[in-house]
View 1 (spheres, rainbow, N blue to C red):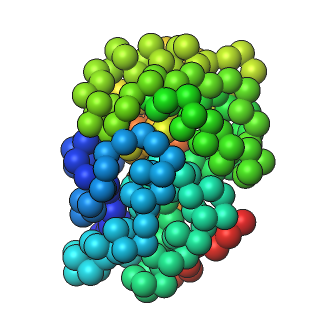
View 2: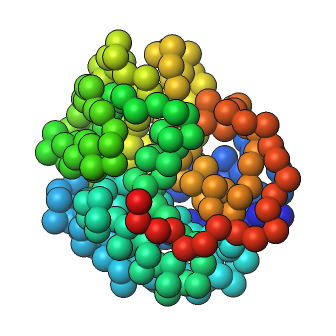
Length: 254
């Protein structure tokens, strides 16, 4: 059994993760702890506060007791809102406090793009334009080329969590660009686990969504590979391999 502990801010789309467990159809477990969020607002200051070390650390002991072998801070805005350097300091602090490998959703997006061998993306984000811009800046800091972006204008995770699939698909179509090799849909508040292949068929290219990437990143930290095409191209890039005896070390700055 492989167990990835998820630290998830508040309550919006956390039911995506039990659904993902079912779609993986293996011995992978994804225990989740909902951290406090403070003000639920898609603003730069609120996102930085959401990702404060004390908030993220709230659930560490519970997830350790649940057998977590790695931890992922399952928040896009609460990680990219810290900036590239700050996001790496954030997970390094988490890893030290937990004594486990750790990462975050935003860092996971960068690793997932490297896995796919792509570097030109379009961003379809539910956020206001300025917050979408922060995510684009984060990606650029990692050497990713953002060729197009669309913003949905949601004011909070509660609002984004209420979006139906058709609205997400519409935003993805709006954001897509002929030069984009992949379309990124950040925000772990969006329910997307059930229809990633539909998004990829609609756009004719790989799509990375926040909750999908969060789980993949946690499995990467444990050296666990699994074949799950129902979760999109990211989970169908390689056949599963035997798991390493030793998990990867603490996430380091790249």
